[in-house]
Image (cartoon, rainbow, N blue to C red; front, side, top):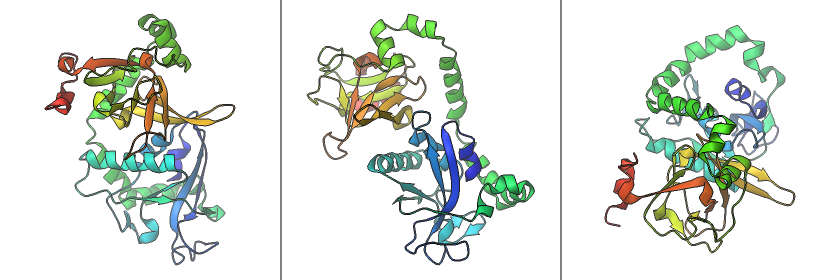
Length: 316
């Protein structure tokens, strides 16, 4: 599990070790008896890579439907798990797991556990960077474990990846000047320079029409009017995303506080922030800038190429 994360821009360090057990100071000889799981601890820069992006890489390394271990490694000490350090990580991990379950990628339910992090114990030095210290043994293990063959088969079903890659390339080709031309000065200041528009004096704060909100740059679907509510803040607010996979949440550290920034995945537009003071049951408030959004009314969804969302508004 070390190599896939070490290659990521924004990852500072990846350490192999043991965690999740009840006894102290586990070693390779007794960590299983003490109830620990083999794990990697990842240190990362949230301004360069989001926690949700780490999870995407994680899912692509494992079989999340196997409760008895991973591939040739059998036993509870090898079962898959995500260890969260705070409530934001827990929420994002649970949502990521739910989205994977809805993807119809697997024929069996997702059993990967989401567990509150406890003390992480670094494994013995000879376990660190095993792929670099023993490259031949490592390659032989991966080949004979069946891991690569399984992952290649499962993720080859991802028909959207080609379109996703082309979409990213298309938006990455836009120069600063081209982006500035297609946006108003306010839209550019908000989406490209992390600006914030004025409350109560923006386009959608009191919009009550039915429809969806998409990224003003890329058009990727972000929020639905069905999840919009009056937060009293003067900005359009939503209880949840329409497509969770289309947003990225990152820590936004200011002088006096740390907030969770919300950005669009494909265009990397700054959208706003998410807070934990929303209505039940989720208790979230996605506070967005109107300037980062484009509203598409339900009667125009098919014409605009978003016909798959028409069913959301039937009998509403």
